[in-house]
Amino acid sequence: MRVRGRYLMTMKTYRYRVVDVFTEKRLEGNPLAVFPEASGLDDETMQRIANELNLAETVFAFPASQAGHDARVRIFTPRREMPFAGHARIGVTFVLIDEGLVTARQGGIVLQEKIGPVAVRVDEGEQPLIWLSTPPIRSGPVFDRLLCAEALGVAADDLLDIPPQLLDAGNPTVFIPLRSRDAVDRAWIDERLTRALLGSDATPACVFVFTPTAEGAYSRMFAPEYGVIEDPATGSSTGPLAAFMMRHGLVSSASGTRFVSEQGRKMGRRSLLHVRINGAQGSEGIEVGGHVVPVTVASMTVD
Image (cartoon, rainbow, N blue to C red; front, side, top):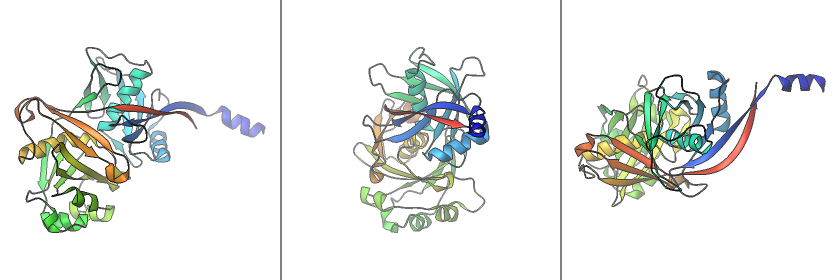
């Protein structure tokens, strides 16, 4: 017993919260774990915690180390650290404000992330939308439609006559437009097929399938190489989705256009990602917004 007691004395307990992001209903949307006061955790331990919790992402918050920032955050999937993630950014903003660790100034806060400084805007209200600004979007290679259909296990006729393409705003994503909700629901891709599609030496990427709808888009996202079989909501890919849809005339490119990408329904985690186009063709930026619902308060003891 004394040995056990000495062992416990060398351990430290960290409080964390789980919130559902991109929803107004508990147990829907994309769950996120947030450690609001993570000082003392090293890289290896953070990665092991993310693997232990096995959510799409786990966020660790620290005091900012640079002037002009409200907090420094690190984002981990079960397999690797991410430089940028949308639902993580929105969820950690909610938690930090709710815990009183930061105060929204002029309607928002600035987070220090691997990708650089990130501004987050918070609407007023009891349950406000929290908005992230999509980082600059880089265009990557296009992909053969027949190869994409084969990788997804759908017919070639299920794809729109638009070349699938990789876009990257910090999270490389291949966008594959399909003709119907049914085709989106039938699509599936695993790690082996992702490698076959991207090439064995390519940087890991997400695979995002969608179909245009009256509201905006009906979507699913697969990221098996990140340890995420399917993601209920992908804020980091939704800004590039808007850019892809504008480029191919699938949504209005006029300034002020708003639409919604519905994601996660197939896996029972319906998520609503709000999109706002600022400036013609998004020349003044693309914002992605969502609601956040608190679910759990817990603690974890680690070495």
